[in-house]
Structures are given as C-alpha cells and as structure tokens.
Image (cartoon, rainbow, N blue to C red; front, side):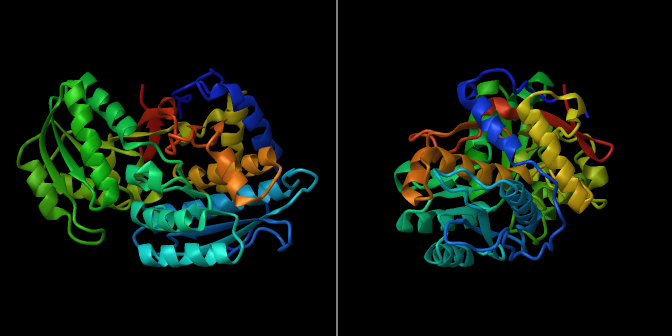
Length: 407
C-alpha cells in the first residue's frame, strides 16, 4: 500500500504530548501468545490492584462485524501492557479484561455495564454500535465510571452535559462528511444521493452530509434510509437509482455497507460509491460484495495503511507492530480493530499520569488526553469528548479487493 495520508511526526494541537504518548505505546510491545477468542477472557490473574476493564461488545448479532475485532484488539493490547505492567504511583498493576457479549442488544449492553461496574470495573470500553454505546453511556453517567466508546454516531457523546463520563474514539460525522463532499466536488460529481443506515449512526450521517454537500456546492438529490440490518435493501437501492445520481454516499456500518453497495449495482447504478469509516470491516470486502465495492471510496483514519515497513515515527512503528500481531493471530488485518486498542492505551496513560486507579481521577486525566494512537490522533478536552482528530483522516479506494490510499 501507499504511504500514510498524513505525517504523524508533524505537530498538531495534540503534538505537544505525542512523544510522551508514543513512549508508553512502545513500552507495551512484546511477543504475544495465542489465546482463545471466546468472548469471556481475562488478560491476567485477578489481583486486588488490577486495572479492571469491563467491555461490553457485539460478539454476536448484527454488530459482530465490528465488535469481534474490538475484542481481539483489547486482548492484544492488554497482553502487551501486561508484559511490564502499568506504572501507577508505586504500584505496577496488570490489566484485567472482563469481556461480555451484548449480542448487539442495547438493553443487554446496559445491563452488562451496570454489572461490570458493580464487580469492580474502573473503566468501561465497548459499544461498536451507536445504540449499544448510548445505552452504556447512560449507565456510565449514573455510576460515574469512565466509558470509552468504539461506536459510530455523534449522539454517543451528546449532549455533553449528560455524557461527562463518555469519550468516543471514532471520527465525528461532520469530519467524515466534509472529506467525502470535498472528494465528490473535486471529481465534478454534482448530484449526490445518500443511502443512510437505520438508527443513530445514520441520523448523524444525514445531518452531516446535508451540511457538507451544501458547503461543497454539491446537490443532494435524494436521501433514503435503509431498513434494519438483515432486511432487504433492494427497495431502498431502487429509490436511489431512479433519480440517476452522479454519485452515492452509503453511510452505515458493516455488514450493511457492502450489502447496500451490492443492491445499488443490482439496481443498475454504475457510478462512484462513497463510504464513511463504518464500512471498513472484512464483511464489506467479502466475495459476495467484491464486484460491487471495487473502485469505491472510503474516508477512514490512517490505520488502514499497513505498509509502514520503512516508517520511523513512533506512531507508525506501533501501528505496524499492532497489525503484525493481529495478523499473527488471525491471519489477516482489520482496519476497524485499533479503536479498542487505543481506548485501553488511553486508559493506561491516564492511570499512569493520575498515579491512581480511582474512577474520578481516571476521568479527569482522560479529558485532558492528547495522543497519537494506532487508529489516529486524539484530543479530548472537557468540552470535546469526540476525540478523533480530523487530520487523522484520509481517503482510500477499494482496489483488487483491498483498501488502498487514494491520492
């Protein structure tokens, strides 16, 4: 693949602390062993001084395409951290993961979040879907426990007054929509239709795409919402194709993104396809979708680049190391996986800086985090809990069944 879309050695508003964050990242690197992928793992022997991380993830159900890679990423990162422990004051605690399968059900996710905190979790990670993340966020607020969401949807951290304990690692809808709209305008695509997923993530996309296209001088000729995952997308695709748009933005998460693309091609739409970052998962590039998505564009953080063999920056080296270990275990990389690894790394950094595993102190340090992670750069502040930096995003294109940087 091509080189990354941004130089992570350049200083942005988060760059002041990038070197410190990078030293912690590399400190966690070490040889990994195989472990069962059973959804109920613990990364170390339980102890009174462990950093207990409760994770509620979509290991089954419609969200599994995104949830399973997050579980794997958590285990890889926890194993790396536990090679040396985390320096917290005079202690060096291990990370203990308590991972549960929420079955892509928001009610189950909320129940698990409450149970995990009762059992001693100092922090929560999870919610690959906007709905499960929102359910966990509500519980986290009640029990005053930091929650790092790996889901897509701006509403996960809004309104901020009700989400003071929640932090979202995925890109904001406005930033992704702006990049896609600018790309469409540069390609002289003047009439765009939007096919948006059902649910909260789709809601964010509709609002953001409408604004971004208007600012880019591109006409939005039709907006169609997809039915729920697993239902037929054929009717929605036909409604888009009948207006004969120059381009179509598919705003959703895998596996819906690939299925929507396939139905659009079946409806005789032959123009360019544009995906948001939620599309990046193995399911989108499956054999069934391969012809439909070939040549499609996606906006995504730079972690999709896995060719950093000559990279010398700390962040690029860490990205390469994580990808190597993921492939070593699971035989292929997954661009959606690094969010959970970054979430755990941010928690570890907060514990180290706070010299404490207290939930309140962890939260205080999380909302002051500036760091370059595997997925991209983060800049949390008390007034901004959606921390993925816009300059972390790049445009990729599907070429020969893989995501490749688009210049």
